[in-house]
Structures are given as C-alpha cells and as structure tokens.
Image 1 (cartoon, rainbow, N blue to C red):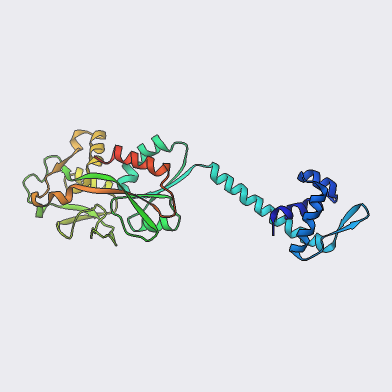
Image 2 (image 1 turned 60 degrees about the horizontal axis):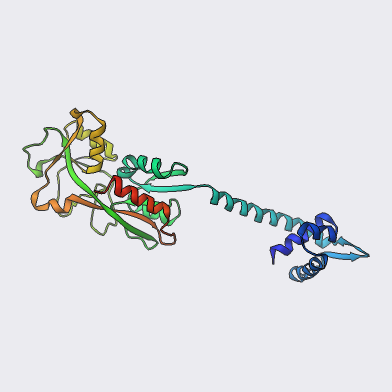
Amino acid sequence: MDTNRLRYFCTIVQTENLRRASELLHISPPALSKAMKVFEEEVGIKVIEQVGRGIIITDQGKRFYEKAYKLLKQIDDLKNINNDITKEKMIRIGSFEVFTTYFIGPLFSKYFQDFHCELHELIPGKMEDALASNMIDIGITYIPIPHPKIDHLKVGKIKMGLFSAQDKFLNISFSKLPFVVPIIPVEGSPTKIKGLDGWPDTSLPRFQKYKVTLMESAMELCRQGLAVAYLPKFIVNLHNEKITSKFSLREIPLPQKRSKECQDQEVFIIKRKSSPEDTNIKQIAKALRMHCCQ
C-alpha cells in the first residue's frame, strides 16, 4: 500500500471535500480522484461515494480511517525519531581502565565536546560482544578477541614497562618480585594473554602476590612500595607529572632475554563490520597516536 495514497484518503475524510483536499495536498482534483480509485482497489473496499457534486465517506471508509490515521501518526513519529537521531551527536565508547581513566579526558575535550557521550567499562571479549549487540559504537583495546561481526583496526603501539616506588626492589631477582596483577582473567585471546595488563604469563611466569580489580589500586600498592606492576609508560608519565616526587614510580629493568616481548602492546580500535570507518574513528585514532602511542 502506498502511504501517499493513504495520506490522501485521510485528508479527504478530514475535509469531507475533494476539492479542498486537493488544494491541501497540492494536486489536481482529477489526479486525486484517480488516486482514490487505485487506493480502493488496494484495500478492497469502497471508501468514498460520489453524491451529486459532493462525496460521502462510507461506513467501511470511516472504520478504515480510524486505523489509517493511527498508522500515519506512527509513521510520522518514526520519521521524527530518525530526525532526532540524525541531529543529536552521540558516541558510545567501550574500553577498560587504561584508556577510560587516562585517555578519555583529552579525547573528549579535544574532539567530542559537542557530543553526548557514553563510556562503558568493558573487558576484552565483553567489549566485542557489546559492539556486536549495538550497546556501544567503538571500542579501544590492546587485547583483541576475534569475533565474526567485528573488525580490529590497528592504530599503533604503546610502550609497556615494569614499575614500582622509588628505591624499592633494587637488588631483587625477577622471580621474587611481588607483582600486583588484574584479578579479572581474559578469555579467547589468540596471543594466549591471560591478564588484562597484557603480561605474557605463559612464556614468562611471575610471582603474583596481589590481585586487584582496578589499575589505580595496583598503582597505590606500587606507591606504597609493596608491589611492582606492568603498566603502560604513558600512564606512569602522566601519573608522575601530577604527584609529588615522593610517590612517583620508577621503571624496573625487565629480564634481558625476555624484554622484547614485554615492551610493546599493539593498540586497536574495534568496530562493527557493518559500520563505516568514519570521522569519529579517525579522530580517536589520531588522539591515541598523540597521547598514548610512542
């Protein structure tokens, strides 16, 4: 059924005058009459009767109008919703603490000040699921989990390092260093990474003395000289800029034979395969390269 003819019919019912309806619809009376004949064939009922020079709406036509009017209103409401969505600038980003705490401020302030923003704390795997189910628009990660509906776009690399408080653990062997590690495991990584910090536990086991949910908790244990943590260098640099030197963190040398596999993490923007690589993605990639990737 053509919605234009449905709208013509409703206008005729409302005006009860063919000529007046044609004026409102900006079409000629003969064209409107022809459209109504096609409309009656489509719906299979007689909706208008010609009486002299005027018209009357049949009982069937009146009943049909009640439903047709509601349908047209729903169609108009849908169009308005679409217009609101188009006009409203909205972005929904999913990531974990590395990026949601220390990167999101510069990102939103420079590129998305006039947007409505949602920030979802999600671990790898859950992030891909949230994208696939349309809960978020874009994800940021350095532990990509394969998903049939998701693309992982490589942005660059962030430098990683081992950190603790000043003058702590200077002469302790690696096997005895008290690590603080993420308590939430990562599942499904093709690189066999087990923890959210990205440490290669399979090839380089470590002494996991503390397990925490938040990276900030791990950094506090480091500040107190109780633990060492595997952290992105850009985060530690920002941390050290904002606090007194007494609580700044210093880098501890990694085991020489294994240092290469622990130094870098590739960063990815993740999106739905059905979504274009749009301006928002390009701006996030630019911001990541500027603030996080070295």
